[in-house]
Image (cartoon, rainbow, N blue to C red; front, side, top):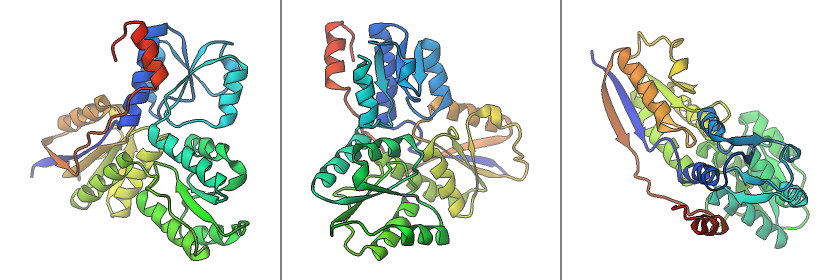
Length: 324
């Protein structure tokens, strides 16, 4: 029997990740090393190591950035507190925050000004959620996307917000189905809870999850290529497993040696939105060596989204004669 690989499309880099990486590369070209980056630019160790080899320095504490240096904010966004500290240190900021994350920040600010209390659905320790919460902390309650009884206990323990107006916002990289389960529970507890004008879970997250849903029921095993620190990659594993498919998160081909594929005839592959294609191709090459001779693609939707660079950064590059 022919051993088969089915590759989900789309997979890998989204527009926000491509933009963030491009900003670091262009900053290194324009200003030279070192260029400081607040947090990992995206959650993929291969990407971080590659940029570090070119002169990017990743920091979690702005005290580690020399006064007056250039500082890039990662794709996940930052809180006003971080921006204020950067100002006090005289840092020259370049904002690589994904525009879809910025949208959630702006929604939080706008609804807080209108007197809403915001239930922010997301992982409290994730940098994106920390940044959004930091915009208007007095107006936000974080709700974790947890399972079953734990979710019900969490919802019941939430205090009743002052006033009548409540709305939910979400982290952009959540499991869509899990998020809707949380929304349903919140609306049961708070019947007047409003929805955001447009879904906050980003197009790339939804597309990659839906592509997995289309393929997982038809394969024996599912590989999600991505870093353990990548929220959207971990969610893809959850989606495959929720459909009864054995699935693992695998960072690169180097981790394939420990996996027993003798009984596997059909493997599905996808990659998180921060995973470069070179890692996907490395795993496919490894699978071909293991006897998987047929490679198919399953395209859920074609993506053509792109985001422009920050205006001030683009203008500065133009004055230096650097094409973008």
